[in-house]
Amino acid sequence: MTTAEVAKKLVEHCRKGDFEGAMKALYAPNIVSVEPMEMQGMPRTTEGIDGVTKKTKWWVDNHTVHSMAASDPFVSPEKFAVQFDMDVTNKPSGKRMKGSEIAIYTVKNGKIVHEEFLMKGQ
Image (cartoon, rainbow, N blue to C red; front, side):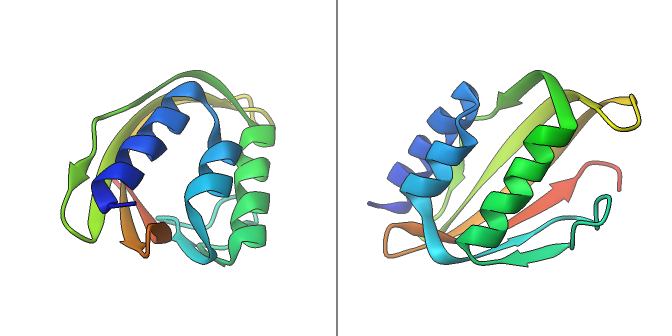
């Protein structure tokens, strides 16, 4: 798949809330995921599909998603970016948060090998 095709499929999965399906279909086994900061004991950088799957499960288990929107992707030959706008409640604290983040993805051989999230206003 081209980077544009990977980007389109990722956005389709995210708009459905199908994060697990996106990872299974589009992520390389050696994926590296970088968050803007550590989150409640989760490291800032996670390596490998198993680690990223666990991190995503932790996020889903610890947040109630009231709404999430994914922009159409911004694409170059080997990278793409997506803006996510979210309204979520952190279950342990009960704190409701609205925010935007940009995710930048690197694609090699039709799979996402690196993702980095940048938070607005951090």
